[in-house]
Image (cartoon, rainbow, N blue to C red; front, side, top):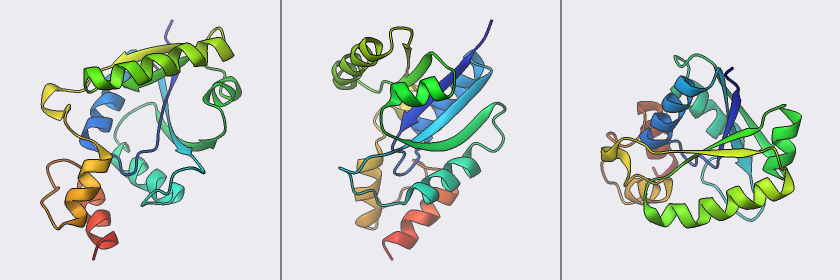
Length: 159
């Protein structure tokens, strides 16, 4: 039996690494909810609506992918969506410590919630939204790191 999984993140903006993890998740789960997190402590470059639009465009050919947003606790969002699986991407060892702590805390708050760690292709492991935004801000070439519509949106933001 296959399930629904949630892939949460800020996706500010979505990168080719994120898309690789989403594609891998679609091979494991019937339905993948890509959930754009709203965090009052962060000031994203793109609004939630813009991030969801960019994600919807980038995943439009991936069967079983839904894009939405959420605020509050991930465990509450998981309960609302009747799922017990969270997908998280791991790029490097440095990601693991934080993600491991979050997985354990989520399990403490929702004992049935499991975290599935997926790794992107090796050539995408160095990508991060933060670094891509900095390159774009400084006028650097970003087209190989993000989908075309994201590159266009980044250039427009920093024009």
